[in-house]
Length: 127
Image (tube, rainbow, N blue to C red; front, side, top):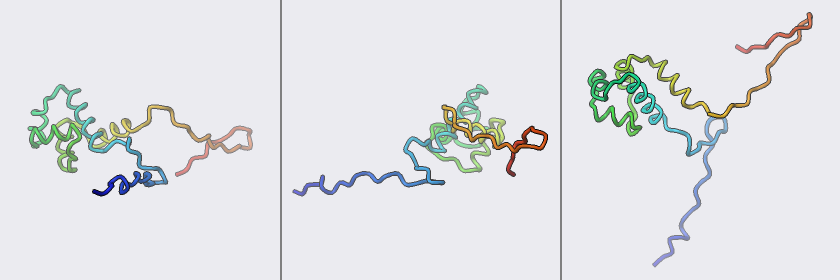
């Protein structure tokens, strides 16, 4: 019998993501965030799964799986569910953005001000 423990490798370090940021295991999956946002919107409107599924022309079990983060909806299904909820894509994306914001305050860069000849200053903006 061979010793399998000798063949076990330690987990690889996280690979860098965009801009050198590590992909952390605690980063949420987009399908989870979408499902949570859709469920909150549906419940806020006091609509049942059946009502939204019928209006969106998707099956009730499929909509339930989307809300639970088990299925990732196509853009067509997402648009249909948004319409059934009376939401635009901008509203959904705004909700997702708010959900992704960290709870703790984020450090901000110091303001960039340029002195004027009259002694006041002007904020420098980039386009």
